[in-house]
Length: 426
Ligand code: AMP
Ligand code: GLY
Image (cartoon, rainbow, N blue to C red; front, side):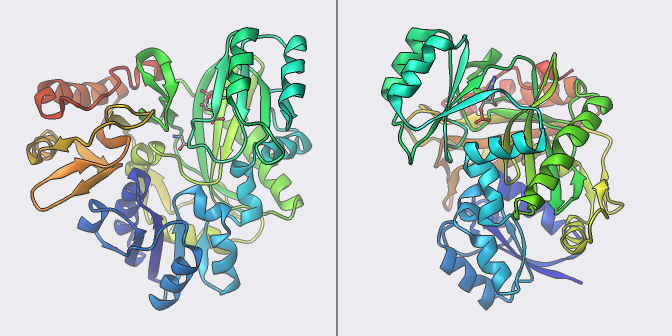
């Protein structure tokens, strides 16, 4: 069966998905909503916003979509999967109830506790005074997490009581804006993303995301400044432990909670002295993880999604013959606009020469936030582009990307990038 696909989203993740879906023999057609100027160079885009649920449903009906794939979390949290499912339209993305695993940290923690999934100890507050009082009983560093969707920016790691107090006074804490105190975990962070449905899952290669804005994990957190996949430091035994202690039990707990999960399930994990621990779950693919992972996947991604959608209990337990992984390393460095992750202060023009030279150097570029006019490409967001290379190992992939960025520095003078992506992965 050839699928008519609607992909929702507009960022780098969705451009990477577009290219991977277009390369699948089972893809008949793909429409992206709202998409971007860069995505529109590859396939049709329609100007329906990712949070316009009724608009998206109407588009799916008009275009006789057989399979909808959801990129970002927002439409999931608004119930896009529930709506499409009720109309009999195939959708790879969790229901509103299951998407709470990302949208509500309190829900995710409760589920992990019930399932015995290892995660940092935590306390939940809906009142500032109670949170301030609790500071007397806790040790530092301490992690303060704002609940709800925060684009990776609602986490504050505080070194001591004074800093904690200051942070608490600056945050809104209420019934509708709860705050979590979490034990600070020390270890090595990595992401395991699976395609899931019920208790079925297919593992994608492990990725590592570099979240802080500056080298050496300095400065505020961002959505991710670069990534690498696979990660040599994450051994097969560690992957096995993550599957057994995290993926299998959480999928079972979701089923038991009447929230059987369908879609990409992202586990943000930490290898600690006590074993693997969950930092967070996301109900979607990661960004920039998608940009490094998807080029490593060979085979028919669309058919694999259809097969897992229709699988009975227990049919896929980690792998699928439809998805083979290339024996290569993939690495990407994000270029960000001035001001990011704070307020972006400037739109930066990127000359065509930069893209031409990247192609000639054997690199690929995914647009994360740009507008493309007739003769101009301009940044339109905080994270602008990700420059990607594949090679036999990480040092070789690093060399390809960084040699290029150094050589062409004059073309991207105003954009910022980290120089240590991949260094800690091997
Ligand atoms: P989150 O939004 O929950 O993914 O957190 C963003 C980042 O903050 C994570 O990728 C970690 O680097 C860091 N972080 C979150 N929770 C913890 C924790 N309990 N211990 C240490 N670091 C954490
Ligand atoms: N790169 C982390 C995320 O997508 O949440």
